[in-house]
Length: 320
Image (cartoon, rainbow, N blue to C red; front, side):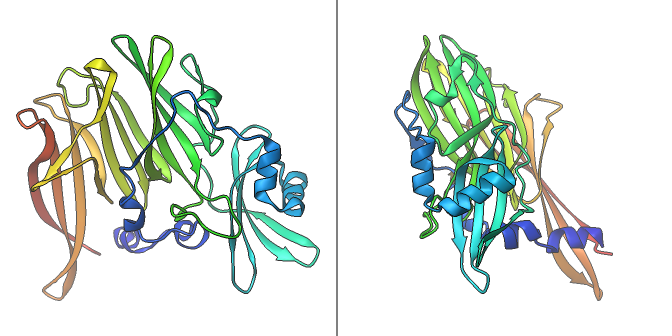
């Protein structure tokens, strides 16, 4: 019965408080890349942020009652109780999400049930001072530095603010903020590329910084989730190039594999990592409900240089 509940119950936080839409709305954006000036941060002053926030009374209450030093992301909510949500940065540099309702004398504030699990800010990635390379809409919390010849490739996970308006919502404001990946390539002490890869994760499940597919090149694997789980892999090539490893499904080449049940394991023969996908499909047989469980293994194909389905097996499990 617990298995049935885990498949059918939608998380309350994701449905009601975080304002998430169906997962396909953000899947379509998951592989988008935003290139920027490698050395431009785009930082704004606290004063201009306060002007952009535009509600001095609410900002003062956030500071006095909740210890928020500056706003990070915000949006409004209409209905019987007009209000909205604000993500702010506290004195420790950590993110804190709050819900608010307008009252006659100001605002009623309460902490949100949506919390940031990865929420320890960092200032540096190797020798790079991140404030010089990130806009103020991004808060970095984890970094991996992978050397490659004369280059250092920085994989930096950030929380990105996706909406900063009470009047309108941005095209990406399915979420108020989300985990993204910024990749900076540093050569001879100079950043030669600086790109934001849009993941739209709510949680970061696993990372690997090693030769994932055993082809002799260093790789970086990311597994994250937001109602479903994603796996995406980048490989480091000669000339400081960073490229995605592709997944082949039929005639399609994809930059990620996604599903509700994903896991990793090392192939005992090749030493490369395999990606396992487990799907549960309810069926009725002899007036009883079962789950048809399909397990699919994506393995590295060195001939085609892609991950592709190498094994599939199906079994029945009782739903009781």
